[in-house]
Image (cartoon, rainbow, N blue to C red; front, side):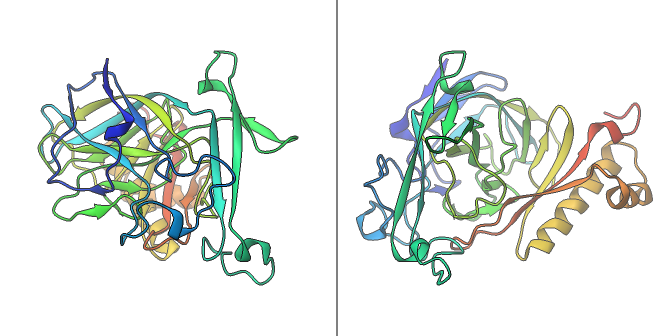
Length: 324
């Protein structure tokens, strides 16, 4: 199995000019070791998110949220869709969250001064599960509260068409820092391809997270990700899509949030109309009446230029009979 070591997972931009660090065939299983969002700086509760102490924070934008790549997919061409299939994510022995002055929406809070006056780092211990690994392990929030590790890849995408954008706040139809909890083992993520070889990047694994990543960080961790990249030739899509065993999800990042929700819903309608036999009228009425239609607000944290990320989701049970 091909392997991309952690020392090659320190890129801080999605850049079509980068030379590939790995080449894979469609469907080939390979693994990538990723850094956490602090680039390895935060290892204990003594490591505070004070910008002056963090390597790379003397740059603008800061060198944070490192990604691995680009990974070249043989045969990928502009106009194809890249299908990302994550087989396994094995996280490190701990994860962390960091809050403090001017971090997140309560970084200047007067109601709860402890959130804005001092820096705080929390370390969450991980313990292995029945497999003996962290793939099915437990995250310990504190001495009495814990939950299953539910890892996902927070930042992934292909090189954008012409622009170069950062891994910390870059987002677009090509992917980016989206923090979508559904980018997880068992699901398929589809991305439009803009360059020969696709030029795929990933990083920023979270051991767990609820919707919005409200503080600006979640359970940040290092990880080993095992995955495959497939191609759907000549398949143009307007932005990221996710296919789960249960549902279809169309993704869009935009500001304000209602723009992200509206566009994601329109993208889902287009998916239903062009590929699943719906008329425009049926698709339009379905998203307003179906009790199982959902809007997921995956990310809505106040960090630099990040835009809210919305996912419009419909269960497969409502697709037309005989549709693909």
